[in-house]
Length: 264
Length: 267
Image: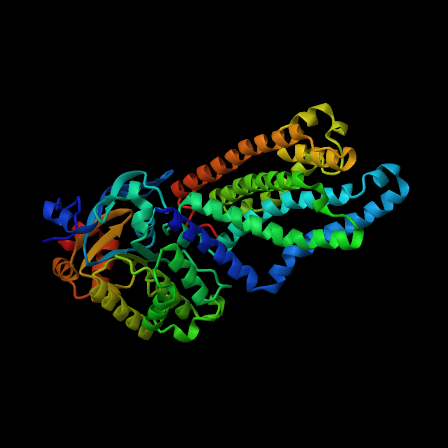
Protein backbone atom coordinates (compact mmCIF):
# COMPACT_ATOMS: atom_id res chain seq x y z
CA UNK A 1 0.00 0.00 0.00
CA UNK A 2 1.35 3.36 -0.98
CA UNK A 3 0.79 5.39 2.13
CA UNK A 4 1.17 8.74 0.47
CA UNK A 5 -1.52 10.29 -1.60
CA UNK A 6 -0.27 12.49 -4.36
CA UNK A 7 -2.41 14.18 -6.95
CA UNK A 8 0.37 13.54 -9.41
CA UNK A 9 0.11 9.77 -8.90
CA UNK A 10 -3.63 9.72 -8.25
CA UNK A 11 -3.16 7.34 -5.35
CA UNK A 12 -5.95 7.86 -2.83
CA UNK A 13 -7.53 4.62 -1.70
CA UNK A 14 -10.13 4.35 1.01
CA UNK A 15 -7.95 2.01 3.10
CA UNK A 16 -5.21 4.59 3.11
CA UNK A 17 -7.53 7.27 4.47
CA UNK A 18 -8.82 4.93 7.18
CA UNK A 19 -5.28 4.19 8.33
CA UNK A 20 -4.10 7.79 8.18
CA UNK A 21 -3.19 9.91 11.19
CA UNK A 22 -2.94 13.00 8.98
CA UNK A 23 -4.92 13.65 5.82
CA UNK A 24 -4.13 16.75 3.80
CA UNK A 25 -6.40 17.55 0.86
CA UNK A 26 -5.88 20.33 -1.66
CA UNK A 27 -3.86 22.48 0.73
CA UNK A 28 -2.93 25.90 -0.64
CA UNK A 29 -1.14 28.82 0.96
CA UNK A 30 -0.76 32.04 -0.94
CA UNK A 31 1.00 35.14 0.43
CA UNK A 32 -0.12 37.82 -2.02
CA UNK A 33 1.84 37.01 -5.20
CA UNK A 34 3.80 34.16 -3.63
CA UNK A 35 2.31 30.69 -3.80
CA UNK A 36 4.06 29.02 -0.84
CA UNK A 37 2.08 25.79 -0.94
CA UNK A 38 0.39 24.83 -4.18
CA UNK A 39 -2.52 22.41 -3.86
CA UNK A 40 -0.85 19.53 -2.05
CA UNK A 41 -2.56 16.36 -0.87
CA UNK A 42 -1.07 13.53 1.12
CA UNK A 43 -1.72 11.16 3.97
CA UNK A 44 0.55 10.15 6.81
CA UNK A 45 -0.24 6.63 8.12
CA UNK A 46 -0.56 5.99 11.84
CA UNK A 47 2.74 5.13 13.43
CA UNK A 48 4.84 6.07 10.43
CA UNK A 49 7.79 8.38 9.88
CA UNK A 50 7.14 10.62 6.88
CA UNK A 51 9.65 13.13 5.59
CA UNK A 52 8.99 16.39 3.82
CA UNK A 53 12.09 16.74 1.71
CA UNK A 54 12.89 19.85 -0.24
CA UNK A 55 15.14 22.86 -0.64
CA UNK A 56 14.70 26.30 0.84
CA UNK A 57 11.34 27.79 -0.09
CA UNK A 58 9.87 24.43 -1.01
CA UNK A 59 6.95 24.93 1.39
CA UNK A 60 7.91 22.42 4.10
CA UNK A 61 7.81 24.83 7.05
CA UNK A 62 4.60 26.47 5.82
CA UNK A 63 2.98 23.04 5.54
CA UNK A 64 3.98 22.15 9.10
CA UNK A 65 2.82 25.57 10.37
CA UNK A 66 -0.59 24.98 8.77
CA UNK A 67 -0.78 21.57 10.47
CA UNK A 68 -0.19 23.37 13.78
CA UNK A 69 -2.75 26.11 13.14
CA UNK A 70 -0.08 28.81 13.16
CA UNK A 71 -0.72 29.64 9.50
CA UNK A 72 -4.22 29.75 8.01
CA UNK A 73 -4.51 27.85 4.73
CA UNK A 74 -5.81 29.76 1.74
CA UNK A 75 -7.67 26.61 0.69
CA UNK A 76 -7.80 22.94 1.51
CA UNK A 77 -8.65 20.66 4.36
CA UNK A 78 -6.62 19.04 7.11
CA UNK A 79 -7.89 16.01 9.03
CA UNK A 80 -5.90 14.78 12.01
CA UNK A 81 -6.73 11.63 13.97
CA UNK A 82 -10.04 11.49 12.12
CA UNK A 83 -11.16 14.99 13.02
CA UNK A 84 -11.31 18.18 11.00
CA UNK A 85 -8.44 20.35 12.21
CA UNK A 86 -10.18 23.64 11.42
CA UNK A 87 -12.98 22.90 13.88
CA UNK A 88 -11.14 20.81 16.49
CA UNK A 89 -7.74 22.49 16.49
CA UNK A 90 -7.28 22.98 20.22
CA UNK A 91 -8.36 19.48 21.28
CA UNK A 92 -6.15 18.01 18.54
CA UNK A 93 -3.18 20.17 19.54
CA UNK A 94 -3.33 18.53 22.99
CA UNK A 95 -2.29 15.30 21.24
CA UNK A 96 0.34 16.91 19.04
CA UNK A 97 3.62 18.71 19.56
CA UNK A 98 6.41 20.15 17.48
CA UNK A 99 9.90 21.55 17.32
CA UNK A 100 11.03 24.19 14.88
CA UNK A 101 14.12 26.32 14.43
CA UNK A 102 11.70 29.24 13.99
CA UNK A 103 10.47 29.02 17.59
CA UNK A 104 12.56 29.19 20.76
CA UNK A 105 11.79 28.66 24.40
CA UNK A 106 12.35 31.58 26.81
CA UNK A 107 16.08 31.66 27.44
CA UNK A 108 15.92 33.35 30.85
CA UNK A 109 13.92 30.45 32.23
CA UNK A 110 15.51 27.17 33.24
CA UNK A 111 14.89 23.97 31.33
CA UNK A 112 12.73 22.70 34.21
CA UNK A 113 10.67 25.90 34.31
CA UNK A 114 10.07 25.76 30.57
CA UNK A 115 9.05 22.12 30.73
CA UNK A 116 6.77 22.78 33.71
CA UNK A 117 4.95 25.54 31.83
CA UNK A 118 4.44 23.43 28.71
CA UNK A 119 3.45 20.37 30.73
CA UNK A 120 0.70 22.46 32.31
CA UNK A 121 -0.36 23.97 29.00
CA UNK A 122 -0.72 20.48 27.53
CA UNK A 123 -2.51 19.14 30.60
CA UNK A 124 0.16 16.59 31.55
CA UNK A 125 -0.63 14.60 34.69
CA UNK A 126 2.20 14.06 37.20
CA UNK A 127 4.28 16.92 35.82
CA UNK A 128 7.42 16.31 37.90
CA UNK A 129 7.59 12.64 36.98
CA UNK A 130 7.08 13.40 33.30
CA UNK A 131 9.82 16.04 33.32
CA UNK A 132 12.17 13.61 35.06
CA UNK A 133 11.35 10.99 32.41
CA UNK A 134 11.95 13.17 29.34
CA UNK A 135 15.06 14.64 30.97
CA UNK A 136 16.42 11.13 31.45
CA UNK A 137 15.50 10.15 27.89
CA UNK A 138 17.22 13.21 26.41
CA UNK A 139 20.16 13.30 28.80
CA UNK A 140 19.07 16.64 30.26
CA UNK A 141 19.07 15.74 33.95
CA UNK A 142 22.20 17.74 34.75
CA UNK A 143 20.87 20.74 32.81
CA UNK A 144 17.35 20.96 34.24
CA UNK A 145 18.05 23.87 36.56
CA UNK A 146 20.16 25.89 34.18
CA UNK A 147 18.70 28.79 32.19
CA UNK A 148 18.25 27.92 28.54
CA UNK A 149 20.37 30.89 27.55
CA UNK A 150 23.41 29.32 29.21
CA UNK A 151 23.18 26.13 27.16
CA UNK A 152 24.96 25.29 23.94
CA UNK A 153 22.97 25.16 20.70
CA UNK A 154 22.92 21.37 20.85
CA UNK A 155 21.75 21.34 24.46
CA UNK A 156 19.01 23.84 23.60
CA UNK A 157 17.90 21.60 20.74
CA UNK A 158 17.58 18.69 23.17
CA UNK A 159 15.62 20.92 25.56
CA UNK A 160 13.35 21.83 22.64
CA UNK A 161 12.88 18.14 21.92
CA UNK A 162 12.01 17.56 25.58
CA UNK A 163 9.28 20.17 25.20
CA UNK A 164 8.13 18.46 21.99
CA UNK A 165 7.65 15.17 23.86
CA UNK A 166 6.45 16.50 27.22
CA UNK A 167 2.80 15.59 26.51
CA UNK A 168 3.47 12.12 25.03
CA UNK A 169 2.20 13.35 21.65
CA UNK A 170 0.53 10.99 19.19
CA UNK A 171 1.50 13.30 16.33
CA UNK A 172 4.99 14.83 16.26
CA UNK A 173 5.95 17.51 13.74
CA UNK A 174 9.66 18.25 13.57
CA UNK A 175 11.30 20.91 11.43
CA UNK A 176 15.03 20.18 11.02
CA UNK A 177 15.24 18.35 14.37
CA UNK A 178 18.99 17.70 14.24
CA UNK A 179 20.15 20.78 12.31
CA UNK A 180 22.29 22.25 15.11
CA UNK A 181 23.62 18.98 16.50
CA UNK A 182 27.02 17.39 16.02
CA UNK A 183 26.91 14.04 14.16
CA UNK A 184 27.20 11.98 17.34
CA UNK A 185 24.38 13.80 19.16
CA UNK A 186 22.27 13.86 16.00
CA UNK A 187 22.62 10.09 15.72
CA UNK A 188 21.73 9.72 19.37
CA UNK A 189 18.61 11.90 18.90
CA UNK A 190 17.55 9.83 15.88
CA UNK A 191 17.80 6.78 18.14
CA UNK A 192 15.56 8.51 20.68
CA UNK A 193 12.98 9.36 18.00
CA UNK A 194 12.92 5.74 16.80
CA UNK A 195 12.51 4.44 20.35
CA UNK A 196 9.67 6.88 21.07
CA UNK A 197 7.89 5.94 17.84
CA UNK A 198 8.06 2.25 18.73
CA UNK A 199 7.01 2.71 22.35
CA UNK A 200 4.23 5.24 21.81
CA UNK A 201 3.10 4.24 18.31
CA UNK A 202 3.41 7.92 17.43
CA UNK A 203 3.21 9.39 13.94
CA UNK A 204 6.04 11.63 12.78
CA UNK A 205 6.17 14.22 10.03
CA UNK A 206 9.68 15.58 9.64
CA UNK A 207 10.87 18.43 7.44
CA UNK A 208 14.54 17.95 6.74
CA UNK A 209 17.47 18.72 4.51
CA UNK A 210 19.39 15.87 6.07
CA UNK A 211 19.20 12.98 3.62
CA UNK A 212 20.96 10.55 5.95
CA UNK A 213 18.39 11.29 8.59
CA UNK A 214 15.54 10.76 6.16
CA UNK A 215 17.01 7.48 4.90
CA UNK A 216 17.56 6.18 8.39
CA UNK A 217 14.29 7.29 10.01
CA UNK A 218 11.61 7.64 7.43
CA UNK A 219 9.53 4.99 5.75
CA UNK A 220 7.91 7.53 3.43
CA UNK A 221 9.25 10.61 1.67
CA UNK A 222 7.38 13.51 0.09
CA UNK A 223 9.64 15.54 -2.16
CA UNK A 224 8.56 19.18 -2.32
CA UNK A 225 9.62 21.80 -4.80
CA UNK A 226 8.18 25.28 -5.24
CA UNK A 227 5.23 24.50 -3.01
CA UNK A 228 4.23 21.26 -4.73
CA UNK A 229 4.76 17.60 -3.94
CA UNK A 230 6.66 16.51 -7.01
CA UNK A 231 7.29 12.92 -6.01
CA UNK A 232 6.74 10.48 -3.19
CA UNK A 233 7.52 6.97 -2.08
CA UNK A 234 9.65 4.99 0.32
CA UNK A 235 13.38 5.78 0.26
CA UNK A 236 14.02 2.45 -1.50
CA UNK A 237 11.36 3.15 -4.12
CA UNK A 238 12.78 6.58 -4.84
CA UNK A 239 16.35 5.28 -5.11
CA UNK A 240 15.19 2.62 -7.57
CA UNK A 241 13.05 5.04 -9.54
CA UNK A 242 15.88 7.53 -10.03
CA UNK A 243 18.62 4.92 -10.34
CA UNK A 244 20.62 6.45 -7.52
CA UNK A 245 22.36 5.10 -4.43
CA UNK A 246 21.62 7.97 -2.03
CA UNK A 247 18.63 10.21 -1.39
CA UNK A 248 20.95 13.18 -1.67
CA UNK A 249 21.50 12.33 -5.35
CA UNK A 250 17.75 11.91 -5.81
CA UNK A 251 17.19 15.27 -4.17
CA UNK A 252 19.77 16.94 -6.40
CA UNK A 253 18.26 15.36 -9.50
CA UNK A 254 14.81 16.61 -8.62
CA UNK A 255 16.06 20.04 -7.57
CA UNK A 256 18.08 20.57 -10.75
CA UNK A 257 16.18 18.72 -13.44
CA UNK A 258 12.64 18.17 -12.14
CA UNK A 259 11.08 14.84 -11.19
CA UNK A 260 9.93 13.58 -14.58
CA UNK A 261 13.12 14.28 -16.46
CA UNK A 262 15.27 13.04 -13.58
CA UNK A 263 13.39 9.75 -13.32
CA UNK A 264 13.78 8.92 -17.04
CA UNK B 1 -11.96 22.19 26.87
CA UNK B 2 -13.14 22.26 30.48
CA UNK B 3 -13.17 25.20 32.91
CA UNK B 4 -10.49 23.56 35.03
CA UNK B 5 -8.41 23.02 31.88
CA UNK B 6 -8.80 26.70 31.02
CA UNK B 7 -7.72 27.76 34.50
CA UNK B 8 -4.72 25.43 34.33
CA UNK B 9 -3.59 26.89 31.01
CA UNK B 10 -4.14 30.47 32.19
CA UNK B 11 -2.16 29.58 35.32
CA UNK B 12 0.64 28.17 33.16
CA UNK B 13 1.02 31.47 31.30
CA UNK B 14 0.97 33.34 34.62
CA UNK B 15 3.58 30.95 35.98
CA UNK B 16 5.79 31.72 32.99
CA UNK B 17 5.76 35.41 33.91
CA UNK B 18 6.21 34.70 37.60
CA UNK B 19 9.33 32.64 36.80
CA UNK B 20 10.63 35.50 34.68
CA UNK B 21 10.07 38.23 37.27
CA UNK B 22 10.98 36.18 40.35
CA UNK B 23 14.19 35.05 38.70
CA UNK B 24 15.41 38.59 38.09
CA UNK B 25 15.63 41.09 40.93
CA UNK B 26 16.12 44.05 38.53
CA UNK B 27 12.80 43.17 36.88
CA UNK B 28 11.13 42.87 40.26
CA UNK B 29 12.59 46.17 41.41
CA UNK B 30 11.61 47.84 38.16
CA UNK B 31 7.94 47.08 38.84
CA UNK B 32 7.91 49.26 41.96
CA UNK B 33 10.68 51.71 41.11
CA UNK B 34 8.93 54.01 38.61
CA UNK B 35 5.62 54.35 40.50
CA UNK B 36 7.66 55.21 43.60
CA UNK B 37 9.77 57.82 41.77
CA UNK B 38 6.67 59.40 40.23
CA UNK B 39 4.89 59.48 43.56
CA UNK B 40 7.82 61.10 45.36
CA UNK B 41 8.26 63.76 42.66
CA UNK B 42 4.59 64.71 42.65
CA UNK B 43 4.43 64.47 46.41
CA UNK B 44 7.02 67.21 46.74
CA UNK B 45 5.32 69.31 44.07
CA UNK B 46 2.11 68.98 46.01
CA UNK B 47 3.81 69.88 49.28
CA UNK B 48 5.09 73.06 47.66
CA UNK B 49 1.69 73.93 46.13
CA UNK B 50 -0.12 73.40 49.41
CA UNK B 51 2.09 76.11 50.90
CA UNK B 52 1.31 78.49 48.01
CA UNK B 53 -2.35 77.86 47.24
CA UNK B 54 -5.48 77.57 49.35
CA UNK B 55 -6.99 75.30 46.67
CA UNK B 56 -4.33 72.66 47.15
CA UNK B 57 -4.45 73.15 50.91
CA UNK B 58 -8.15 72.29 50.84
CA UNK B 59 -7.81 69.41 48.39
CA UNK B 60 -4.95 67.63 50.06
CA UNK B 61 -3.55 64.71 48.14
CA UNK B 62 -5.16 65.60 44.80
CA UNK B 63 -1.89 65.42 42.85
CA UNK B 64 -0.72 62.30 44.65
CA UNK B 65 -4.03 60.56 44.02
CA UNK B 66 -3.87 61.64 40.37
CA UNK B 67 -0.36 60.35 39.81
CA UNK B 68 -1.05 57.02 41.50
CA UNK B 69 -4.32 56.49 39.63
CA UNK B 70 -2.63 57.45 36.37
CA UNK B 71 -0.07 54.78 37.12
CA UNK B 72 -2.87 52.21 37.39
CA UNK B 73 -3.79 52.98 33.78
CA UNK B 74 -0.20 53.23 32.60
CA UNK B 75 1.05 50.10 34.43
CA UNK B 76 -2.05 48.15 33.41
CA UNK B 77 -1.43 48.91 29.75
CA UNK B 78 2.34 48.52 29.78
CA UNK B 79 2.12 45.41 31.98
CA UNK B 80 -0.07 43.68 29.42
CA UNK B 81 1.91 44.83 26.40
CA UNK B 82 5.29 43.95 27.95
CA UNK B 83 4.06 40.50 28.96
CA UNK B 84 3.11 39.90 25.34
CA UNK B 85 6.36 41.39 24.04
CA UNK B 86 8.31 38.94 26.23
CA UNK B 87 6.96 36.10 24.08
CA UNK B 88 7.93 37.96 20.94
CA UNK B 89 11.43 38.81 22.22
CA UNK B 90 12.01 35.17 23.14
CA UNK B 91 10.41 33.84 19.91
CA UNK B 92 8.11 31.75 22.07
CA UNK B 93 4.80 32.89 20.58
CA UNK B 94 4.67 30.05 18.04
CA UNK B 95 5.20 27.45 20.76
CA UNK B 96 2.58 29.02 22.98
CA UNK B 97 -0.12 29.35 20.34
CA UNK B 98 0.39 25.80 19.05
CA UNK B 99 -0.68 24.38 22.42
CA UNK B 100 -4.28 23.83 23.54
CA UNK B 101 -4.20 27.38 24.98
CA UNK B 102 -7.02 29.31 23.30
CA UNK B 103 -6.61 32.90 22.25
CA UNK B 104 -9.30 33.88 24.77
CA UNK B 105 -7.41 32.13 27.57
CA UNK B 106 -4.25 33.88 26.48
CA UNK B 107 -5.93 37.28 26.68
CA UNK B 108 -7.28 36.49 30.16
CA UNK B 109 -3.79 35.40 31.23
CA UNK B 110 -2.24 38.62 29.91
CA UNK B 111 -4.82 40.71 31.75
CA UNK B 112 -4.27 38.79 34.98
CA UNK B 113 -0.49 39.15 34.73
CA UNK B 114 -0.99 42.88 34.10
CA UNK B 115 -3.21 43.11 37.20
CA UNK B 116 -0.56 41.39 39.33
CA UNK B 117 2.24 43.56 37.96
CA UNK B 118 0.21 46.72 38.61
CA UNK B 119 -0.70 45.78 42.19
CA UNK B 120 2.85 44.70 43.03
CA UNK B 121 4.25 47.86 41.45
CA UNK B 122 1.85 50.35 43.02
CA UNK B 123 1.26 48.98 46.49
CA UNK B 124 4.66 50.07 47.88
CA UNK B 125 4.11 53.60 46.48
CA UNK B 126 0.71 53.88 48.20
CA UNK B 127 2.21 52.82 51.53
CA UNK B 128 5.14 55.21 51.09
CA UNK B 129 2.68 58.05 50.33
CA UNK B 130 0.93 57.44 53.67
CA UNK B 131 4.19 57.35 55.60
CA UNK B 132 6.01 60.20 53.87
CA UNK B 133 3.30 62.59 52.67
CA UNK B 134 0.45 61.64 55.00
CA UNK B 135 -1.88 60.87 52.12
CA UNK B 136 -3.73 57.57 51.83
CA UNK B 137 -5.07 56.63 48.42
CA UNK B 138 -7.33 54.24 50.32
CA UNK B 139 -9.18 57.28 51.76
CA UNK B 140 -11.05 57.35 48.43
CA UNK B 141 -13.04 54.43 49.86
CA UNK B 142 -15.30 52.30 47.70
CA UNK B 143 -14.85 54.66 44.76
CA UNK B 144 -11.20 53.61 44.62
CA UNK B 145 -12.27 50.08 43.68
CA UNK B 146 -14.30 51.40 40.74
CA UNK B 147 -11.54 53.84 39.77
CA UNK B 148 -8.91 51.11 39.88
CA UNK B 149 -10.80 48.59 37.77
CA UNK B 150 -11.99 51.25 35.32
CA UNK B 151 -8.46 52.45 34.74
CA UNK B 152 -6.86 49.03 34.50
CA UNK B 153 -9.59 47.81 32.14
CA UNK B 154 -8.94 50.82 29.91
CA UNK B 155 -5.23 49.98 30.09
CA UNK B 156 -5.97 46.38 29.07
CA UNK B 157 -8.02 47.59 26.10
CA UNK B 158 -5.12 49.68 24.82
CA UNK B 159 -2.58 46.97 25.71
CA UNK B 160 -4.48 44.29 23.80
CA UNK B 161 -4.73 46.53 20.75
CA UNK B 162 -1.00 47.32 20.85
CA UNK B 163 -0.11 43.65 21.37
CA UNK B 164 -2.27 42.83 18.37
CA UNK B 165 -0.45 45.45 16.30
CA UNK B 166 2.91 43.87 17.17
CA UNK B 167 1.58 40.39 16.36
CA UNK B 168 0.42 41.64 12.97
CA UNK B 169 3.19 44.12 12.05
CA UNK B 170 6.14 42.88 14.11
CA UNK B 171 8.30 44.63 16.67
CA UNK B 172 8.38 47.81 14.57
CA UNK B 173 5.00 48.58 16.18
CA UNK B 174 6.41 48.14 19.69
CA UNK B 175 6.75 51.89 20.29
CA UNK B 176 2.95 52.26 20.11
CA UNK B 177 2.87 50.77 23.61
CA UNK B 178 4.25 54.07 24.89
CA UNK B 179 2.98 56.38 22.17
CA UNK B 180 -0.72 55.55 22.61
CA UNK B 181 -0.84 55.99 26.34
CA UNK B 182 1.10 59.26 26.38
CA UNK B 183 -1.03 60.65 23.57
CA UNK B 184 -4.11 59.98 25.68
CA UNK B 185 -2.70 61.53 28.87
CA UNK B 186 -3.57 65.17 28.03
CA UNK B 187 -7.12 64.13 27.13
CA UNK B 188 -7.76 62.23 30.35
CA UNK B 189 -7.61 65.27 32.63
CA UNK B 190 -5.27 63.61 35.07
CA UNK B 191 -4.11 66.81 36.76
CA UNK B 192 -6.76 69.31 35.59
CA UNK B 193 -10.50 69.39 34.91
CA UNK B 194 -11.63 68.48 31.41
CA UNK B 195 -13.48 71.84 31.30
CA UNK B 196 -10.22 73.73 30.73
CA UNK B 197 -9.64 71.91 27.43
CA UNK B 198 -10.81 73.40 24.11
CA UNK B 199 -14.37 72.35 23.43
CA UNK B 200 -13.46 70.05 20.50
CA UNK B 201 -10.87 68.30 22.68
CA UNK B 202 -13.52 67.84 25.36
CA UNK B 203 -15.54 65.84 22.84
CA UNK B 204 -12.59 63.43 22.51
CA UNK B 205 -12.13 63.30 26.27
CA UNK B 206 -15.78 62.39 26.70
CA UNK B 207 -15.08 59.07 24.94
CA UNK B 208 -12.35 58.08 27.42
CA UNK B 209 -13.28 56.21 30.62
CA UNK B 210 -10.21 57.65 32.36
CA UNK B 211 -11.53 61.22 31.96
CA UNK B 212 -14.58 60.30 34.09
CA UNK B 213 -12.40 58.55 36.65
CA UNK B 214 -10.21 61.60 37.21
CA UNK B 215 -13.25 63.89 37.35
CA UNK B 216 -14.71 61.47 39.89
CA UNK B 217 -11.48 61.47 41.88
CA UNK B 218 -11.54 65.27 42.10
CA UNK B 219 -15.20 65.15 43.17
CA UNK B 220 -14.29 62.85 46.06
CA UNK B 221 -11.26 64.86 47.16
CA UNK B 222 -12.63 68.40 46.62
CA UNK B 223 -16.39 68.06 47.08
CA UNK B 224 -16.23 64.95 49.28
CA UNK B 225 -18.92 63.35 47.15
CA UNK B 226 -18.98 60.16 45.10
CA UNK B 227 -20.43 61.00 41.67
CA UNK B 228 -22.31 57.87 40.63
CA UNK B 229 -22.96 59.35 37.17
CA UNK B 230 -19.21 59.56 36.52
CA UNK B 231 -18.60 56.03 37.75
CA UNK B 232 -21.38 54.63 35.55
CA UNK B 233 -20.06 56.52 32.53
CA UNK B 234 -16.54 55.18 33.13
CA UNK B 235 -17.70 51.58 33.50
CA UNK B 236 -19.98 51.80 30.45
CA UNK B 237 -17.25 53.26 28.26
CA UNK B 238 -14.87 50.58 29.47
CA UNK B 239 -17.18 47.89 28.15
CA UNK B 240 -16.96 49.52 24.72
CA UNK B 241 -13.17 50.08 24.84
CA UNK B 242 -12.49 46.57 26.10
CA UNK B 243 -14.64 45.17 23.31
CA UNK B 244 -12.61 47.22 20.82
CA UNK B 245 -9.31 46.03 22.35
CA UNK B 246 -10.37 42.37 22.31
CA UNK B 247 -11.74 42.64 18.77
CA UNK B 248 -8.50 44.30 17.64
CA UNK B 249 -6.39 41.53 19.19
CA UNK B 250 -8.54 38.82 17.58
CA UNK B 251 -8.50 40.50 14.15
CA UNK B 252 -4.74 41.06 14.25
CA UNK B 253 -4.23 37.47 15.43
CA UNK B 254 -6.20 36.17 12.45
CA UNK B 255 -4.27 38.45 10.08
CA UNK B 256 -0.98 37.28 11.61
CA UNK B 257 -2.03 33.67 10.92
CA UNK B 258 -3.01 34.57 7.37
CA UNK B 259 0.35 36.23 6.78
CA UNK B 260 2.42 33.59 8.54
CA UNK B 261 3.68 36.03 11.18
CA UNK B 262 3.34 33.87 14.29
CA UNK B 263 6.46 31.82 13.60
CA UNK B 264 8.41 34.76 12.23
CA UNK B 265 7.69 37.56 14.66
CA UNK B 266 10.65 38.10 16.97
CA UNK B 267 13.88 39.97 17.44
